[in-house]
Amino acid sequence: MPGRAVSRERCLALDAGDPLRRFKDEFVLPEGVVYLVGNSLGALPRRAAERVRRAVEDEWGGQLVGGWNHAGWYEQPMAAGDRLAPLIGAGPGQVVVGNTTSIAVFQAVAAALRLRPGRRVIVSDVRNFPTDHYMVQGLAGLLGGYEVRDFAEGRFDDAAVVLLAEVDYRTGARHDVPAVTAEVQAAGALMVWDVCHSVGAMEVDVSAADFALGCTYKYLNAGPGAPAFLYVNPRHHAAAANVLSGWHGHAEPFAFEPGYRPAEGVRRFAVGTPHVLSFAALDAALDLWAEVPMAQVRAKSMALTSLFVDLVGDALKLASPADAAARGSQVSFSHPDGYPVMRALIDRRVHGDFRAPDILRFGFAPLYVGYADVYDAAATLLEVLDKELWRDEKYAGRLAVT
Ligand SMILES: *Cc1c(COP(=O)(O)O)cnc(C)c1O
Image (cartoon, rainbow, N blue to C red; front, side, top):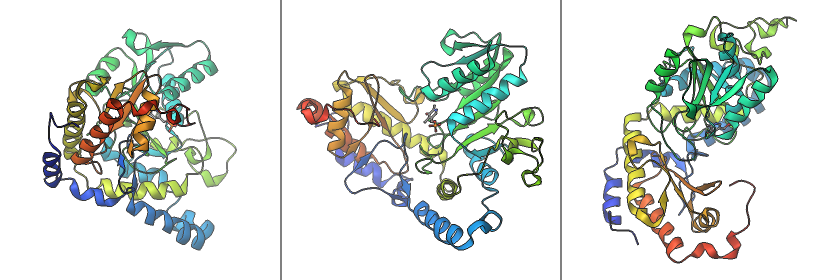
């Protein structure tokens, strides 16, 4: 059992004094489960279940196509963007919601390339979540004549654009957003931040960046398949082009003109029909975020991840930065048999996930994970390791989604 660092009683006392304590009741969580995968799919906010039910039954069922005009469906991409903006340090009219993060990466990088026509280098991080890097490869292949350079080379002087994630999905390592942004822009390149693993876990400020994007289904809790968001710095609103020039980014979609004329501002980055039902869940999630003090979220997040690191001790090799300030809201460990270890753990109702080749990953969503949860998760993990419970052959085969 852990206990060397802190007792379970002490964890219960920390929970009792937690200023974010009341938020746990806002979520639907199966009894007895410690859910440490909020960095992959956030838990269900109770109010989202009710909001989606209304969208289905009252809006779709009751208003049919009238929902576009009378239930606000048409305005969802910009309305959700304005509500989300404060979570990333942006203002109204600067964020549009829709599509997926992968698509937003394509849009932002393509727009950046057109704003830097003389430069032929795209800097991307080979360690980033692969879809970002894949989208860059596809775009470079389409355009021809572009070099894709790894961020680790640290050379931006001839780059058109630099794409980077604020928090690394695998290790949880966190970049210094203001410092990297300033360095990239001083070199004459444009900066695109992916904040998938930081938004909702800490105070994010991308206001100095040229573009930023992220998803809403991780720490923001908007549900599986929830739409992504794209921030465009106002200094680019007049000149930035959306290469995915769909009708919802047209100045007058319902004029049905044969020629594409972009809408003013960030709205031009909308593409096609919004995912109305997913927006309903996002709307409810954002209602909740409007009540959340983000500084408290970050403070608790650092306390939770540090507690977990302390409790696990040297039973596993830490793959995240040891300093809480240098990581996001996750802790990763490496283990050569990480996959069966994680399966054995999930079988005991402690949910983390596995990232190839050997990473055990644990995300701590401070709105619904408490200190005693962390204690229990660490105790179960240590038991799985000590007793080698993961060696049971039923944990050997891989499932489709890890
Ligand atoms: C989760 C995540 C994505 C997901 O992209 P989708 O298009 O929503 O599947 C992309 N990039 C990063 C860095 C992520 O963490």
